Image 1 (cartoon, helix red, strand yellow):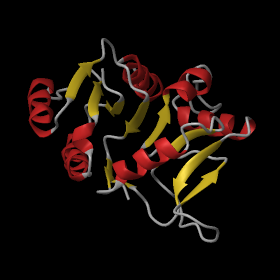
Image 2 (cartoon, rainbow, N blue to C red; image 1 turned 45 degrees about the horizontal axis):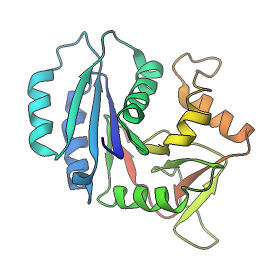
Image 3 (cartoon, rainbow, N blue to C red; image 1 turned 90 degrees about the vertical axis):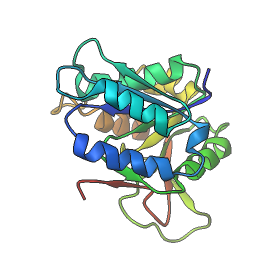
Image 4 (cartoon, rainbow, N blue to C red; image 1 turned 30 degrees about the horizontal axis):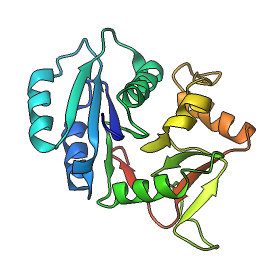
Length: 205
């Protein structure tokens, strides 16, 4: 049973991004110590068998699950994290199919995971910062906010806070991230962010 999982939601519609994204994960130091789980949406021409063979050649531990029905962003994200923790993970990262990551992203996650493991008010570890933070000490900052572009959480915080409150924000039926952002602030909780650099970069940027 894997203790640390990177869960990918795959829409099946962004193949041109996915290979480059996974090449960046392949360069991330320590990736061979993680189990990669891909939750793939059905109903497209996405080459599931070829993709499965490719990721198993590239990574030490990987599996591909095809959803029984098309779930959409809101439900597939939840399903990916439920599957990750259901497989035995104590910490799981939710990865985007169109976001490259830095070589040190897993070192950042591993450090933050261990550093804040006992801090129940810290709900998530976010890899993407919208701006460079200045002032204060250390390489990370805590904020009562949330950024969904590659993030991780612990089993207990998933079970006790994130999963029970999962849903959409009014005005957008797929916006689980806005919903979680509002809940974190309302509950007086925090997310961890890298201070000086972005550890995840959207392909759309």
